[in-house]
Each structure stands twice: as structure tokens, then as C-alpha cells.
Image (cartoon, rainbow over all chains, first blue to last red; front, top):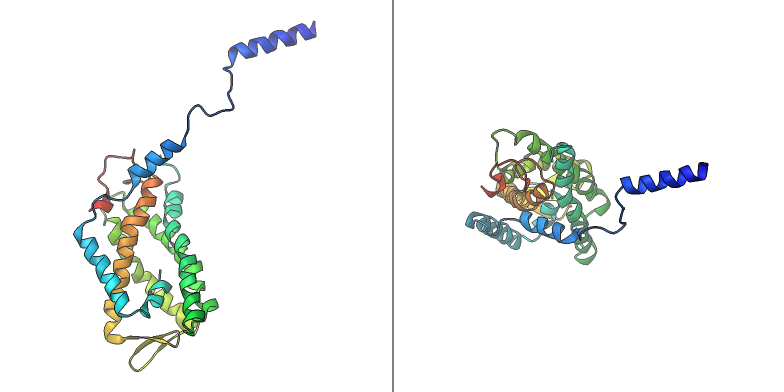
Length: 74
Length: 163
């Protein structure tokens, strides 16, 4: 009697619950890549930022020793 | 995604310095052993390794708090960080005995002298570096972690980093 109940209980559970697949339904990596792409820095960098970058590079080339002091503060 | 905003801001803030510190350390090691610049590495690295990532995280948390209203763009907010960092770094350097005030300028590591006349332009260069790092790199991390004003599915705000 008890075994019959167990079998019926199992059968009811199987009907009630959707089968669980251990595999992912979809590949999540393309989604992650798309998100990184959407978040990527501005495609066009303003000219002011290029000027700032040039000033930083030139000042470090003019005084290479100060790179260490700069790095100390980064 | 509006939960744990400050934790996400802290995490986004510490990414860049945490990645950069080992590379900076390599430069210090090359300078010390390759070019024989007497840099006391073991005392120098304490400030960049221990404090700067934490300060970046806290500064980004401050930005997450302040940017809910009208506030500066992220780049300018980051450019203000050296105002806090430089005095702290110099205090650490004095305590570590690798900074002294000479007759011609500030002497770092007993080898590098920054003339007093160039000190203000040097601070400006540090602020420019910080502006660029915060605008592009920290801003990117903020977007990835969907901080308010940055989330790709977030509120309809224009991205402050683009201004």
C-alpha cells in the first residue's frame, strides 16, 4: 500500500514540476560580450582629452624621472 | 538594479588601481635595480598598494552619493582626488624618509628633484591623468556595474562621463 502511494506521489510530482535540464538554455557569453560592447568608452574622444593626454605624455618625456613620482601617486 | 549601490561603486572604483599597482611596482623595481635609482621600494609601495585602491573606491562611493543630484561629471570628480591624495602621499613619503625639502625643490627618493616652480604644473599633470583615468576607465567600470546614471538599462539620464 505504502509503495503504491509513493509511486503515485512520484508520478504526481513529475507531472507538477517541469523537467530540469542541467544544461543552460542559452549561451550567456554572447550576452556578456554585448553588454561590454554597449558599455565601451565613447567611440569619439573629444579633442580636449587628446590635448590633455598629449600634455601628460610630453611632460613625462621632458622629465622622465618624474614618472616615478607620478606613479607613486597613482 | 538599484541594490547595494555603494558596494558596487566601491568595487568599480578599486578595479583600475588594483590592476595598475603591479605594473607600477614593476617600474619601481626596474628603476631600482635596472637604473640604480635609490628607491626604497619596501617603504614606497605601502602608500600605492594599501591606500590608493581604497581611496579610489571611497571616492567612487562619494560620487555615487553626490551624482544623484546635480553634480560634476565623473572625470572632474576624479580630477579632484589628487587634492586629497598628494598631501597624503607626501606625508607618507616624509614619514618613510624618502621625501625632503631641498634648496632647489622637493627631493624624492634622494634622487629626483622637482623644482618648486614646477610643483604646481606637476600637480596639474597629475590631475589631468586622474581626469582621463576616471572619465574613461572608472566610468567604464561604473557602466558595467550599472551604477545610477551609468546603467545601460538605468534611468534616462545622460551619461555624465560624456560631457
